[in-house]
Image (cartoon, rainbow, N blue to C red; front, side):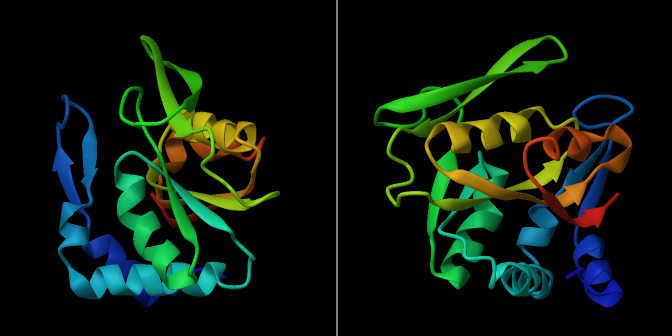
Length: 180
């Protein structure tokens, strides 16, 4: 179920564009103004709850760190656990890792080896934005590597011109609240 046009406007209007950040030519989508807008946040989380309430999700996994900001309140609303996907060296227990390519070099994400204690867990991956898809693809792979099944990848914003969802859709369905 797609978000209504009116609700999309509420959420989109709460996201600030910052030109030339972090470098010239990039228009950064700043969610801090969404986070401090209680009407917009409630509108967003209400929609996500409605969208996912019947999907039999066992856990929500969110990418560091902005995925945490949307994943935790949604997990609370759905009555499921939240699992953080983090950069190397941030998790205190035994981890498994997934590397992915960047424009120049590689990066890596990690998850606790016992992140999904429920057998055959159904997991929703969430992040604030999908651009080229590298972090999301690695995160979905990591969820599956940990013994769970990523049933969908959810993004608050999809930068459609970068075609990141095309990469993710090869391994799991995607849902974007806002296509930009």
